[in-house]
Length: 251
Image 1 (cartoon, rainbow, N blue to C red):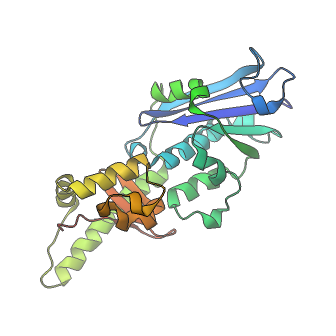
Image 2: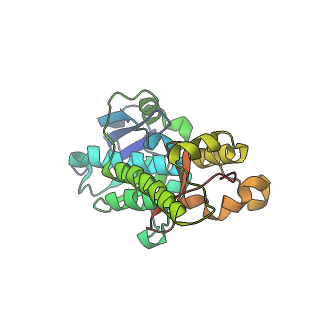
């Protein structure tokens, strides 16, 4: 129980995976888990497929999901562990799950995932992708199916409720068109700007400076951390408020 322990996680568009290893050598823990052959031994590993909602997560959200799921799945090994290290190949997650306070996290999905980790004591470490081979393999060839988390189902309900509310409001206003989710999705598929936004939010690969983004995406740059993709549509959430749909310009 007192051995140095490391949990290595990974997320991709197919699934999430993790490995938990413990140290049996006398090498400095900072070199874990590639210090010497056989120095770190496998204690537990796991993987699962993503739900449809999770496959639309931005990379930082997906990597956070992998950490939260690993801690929950391996809790008998990790809860109360005095010297636990979490390793990820996604550098932004190191600070997010390290010293960033809950009050400073505006993305509701990241807020919820970090909150799930608060009962564990650990330090975060960046592990380059070329060294993250085991968890990387497990995430790309997951073995278990999984039911959606309650929060994901609630978000789908919230999106449907937002569409219903918009429709009711439109009926009460003269000169406004009544639209439904199917119409929004069809219009979004035909809108090149909207599809560019979907791709950018899904990949999380924003430029370091707003001026380097295509002109059509610059209006979204300041709120990029509050955007997500669900069922092919971009959603926007302000702090912990209601989920809103980003509507194509044609509508």
